[in-house]
Amino acid sequence: DVREPAEYAAGSIPTAINIPIASHPDALFLSPDEFQDRFGFAKPAATKEVVFYCKAGVRSSAAAQLARQGGYERVGEYRGSWLDWERRGGARSRDDVPGDKVGGTGESRV
View 1 (tube, rainbow, N blue to C red):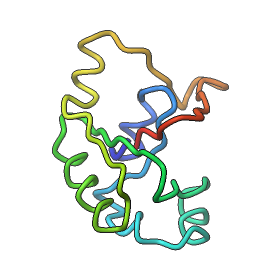
View 2: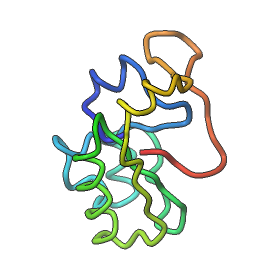
View 3: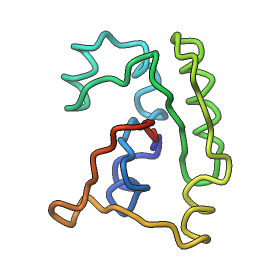
View 4: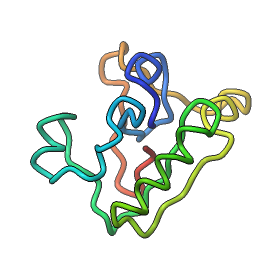
């Protein structure tokens, strides 16, 4: 999820992690330690499949391009993004609900 933190906190796709690309365009170019310090979780491995989404698809497209420039090879984009997810009635996680975040073992949705 590349939306800003307030957007992410209001609701996100389960298993998504928040990397707000507009305010942190260098995020995917940080070292693993710098990334951990800035965001509080491990940087997705460049070998892992990552799927980017935002509100409507513009920021996620930019994030996917940055990821490819940063060495990520398995990059996807959810072009409909959050608006499509909500319209289709997709499950959601919220930061303001304790224990509502679900950890995933497959792909990362960023």
